[in-house]
Image (cartoon, rainbow, N blue to C red; front, side, top):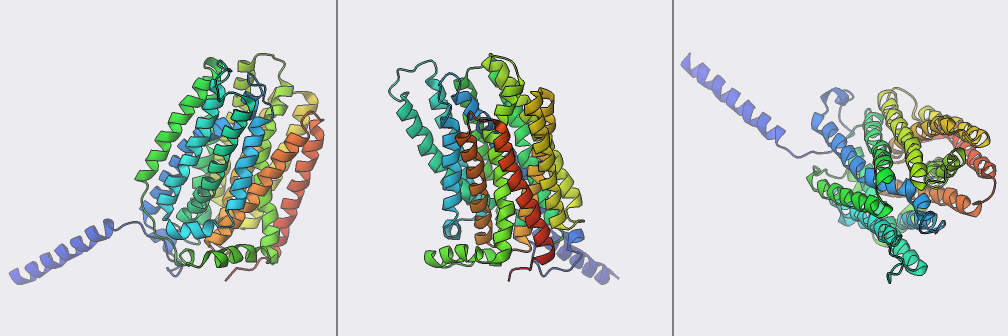
Length: 454
């Protein structure tokens, strides 16, 4: 009897050792050959890692989005450089788009965690350039405060940000994809984007508070230090292994060839229309929405204008979060292309409210418009990530194609905003409507014709 108990104790001891060893194992990607009920067996630490990643992005982009949304308005005030904010953003997104052509080769040498940590410093540099420019408001005689010098500084850091941002976003898609299976992608990407884009809420709360009481320089300095803290926190992110299809190493020429090869596929060409549209949304609210708000407010006080603009973006941030959570809950239960169509229809409603806000000069309607832009963008980005990691092969090159197309979309929206500056905003809104209709039609086609990439 004693012998049986001893054996039982040994077996129990061995089982405990095995369980402890399993709990101490590093995070590893979900394998696609796992059984269909993997969703119930999934390691909860993978979900926690996605949530932590979303929180880190939320902190970093609370600083960046706050500045990105206000930079054109701020530069046009005391500096009298109405073009510089949009010019800087155009440079960022042009470089971001172009650098994706060779980004898959760079990712051969970087793990997802180290890639994202490196890339965060591009955002720190962008905010540093903003602080330098705003320091010239009260000291215009400094050697770096000439118009030419400020353009060079902002363009230089815009180029650096564009190069590093392409690394950040490709690594982000790969990181989240490696932590979820086919049945939970909408849930995981929805949670990530809900957290990340809630930065629009927190960033603009910062704007509303700081711009009401502090100088533009003090505002940028505080965002600068927040971005440094956020960047350092990426060191605490758990390491995640790349999936096999993401680790295929080839010479640079072959990598570039693979990048352009995807554009020869009809499905990818049509999907790129939807990706471009996601960029149009970003370009619209960063480079144009503030103009509609300005028209609706009768004030000459810059602080009041900045605060009221921030309130509209706070509303946008709230609905970014709600859109992400909606996709997280329903995305795995619905056809992904139907969910994508919901995002384009939300933007259509936002466009209608924007037109109405302009014609009626109604500040209240700006909030309805921003709600549609926010929810539409978050669902749009979540759906794109799901499609990339399921139907379109889950490869680094596919992620790069998305950011390339999205960069083109941002560039188009910002370029039209600059070219039509001073013209009736109605023309700009009609152009955005064309892209919204094109994106909706692309999803209708893909729903019935897409085939899974090998």
